[in-house]
Length: 168
Image (cartoon, rainbow, N blue to C red; front, side):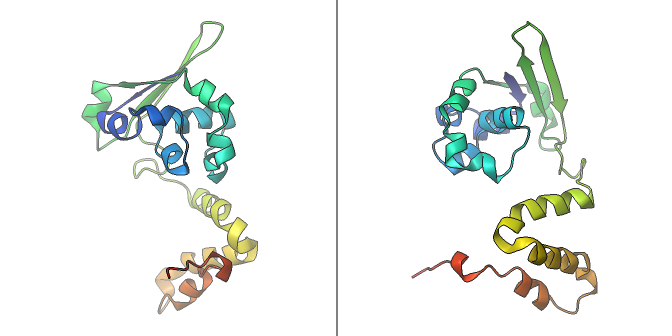
């Protein structure tokens, strides 16, 4: 697999050797090769892909040995207006699949639908707060412009005590 990207992306998340063998969540989360490869392998990028057993999997690291990141002057010229990438996957039969995306999903020029925002929110929040609390927060947020204050929302997003930080 070859990933063509703009200079900022290559410099920040696609040039250091550790990006091909992430040993921490932070490195995996800031690795262009890992994020691209795991999206191709798993078909999604969620919190599951940033668990140690996934990003440190020897099979993933083996796959990453075949991932190259290259600078593309055309894509660099578009940055920061676009955060373009081109991904090429070379198949065993010699065929090459390529996809270019100038504005990833969630970019201002390629926004998520409301239902997609809700789906992403639920996937992230329901494991910690449950389905009912997640729905309560969704309902409050969609009516936020009508609220007199944000007290209800702040109470709804309060994490259970077991997640509270102890800064002492």
